Image (cartoon, rainbow, N blue to C red):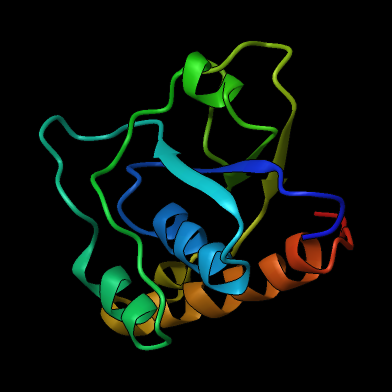
Amino acid sequence: MLGGVPRILFVGVANMSASRIAEGLLRLADPRARVGSAGVSVAPGARGMDEDARRALAEIGARCDGDPRQLTASLADRHDEVIVLGDVDVGRHIAPDCAIRRWVLEDPAGRGVTGLARHRLLRAMLGERIRAELVTGATRPD
């Protein structure tokens, strides 16, 4: 990562799929990365991650261990960058002055692509953004 090792938090809806894929991909791309993920609507008692998301990561030697985490203001404050995946509403969960970056992604499910195929496409899209914006330090407008 360019310019040190910032703490990055990826945020999704349930912290079971896309945000966890992004976390695993960044760890694979830069083992020094300090990265986490969270969701705005984590189900009580949720464990692990979506099995297809886990398999999509495992296919390329990446992983994301642990259980889903609920986004809170204190969790966001412990990170240098909060990257929100899609149009997730984080307003109720973080301080108003918290700087966020939003990555607009097309969910393959909107085209009828589901299961492992959906997660492979998410992996490819997220991997491209991570390489372009976080690993090389370049920025791309949303």
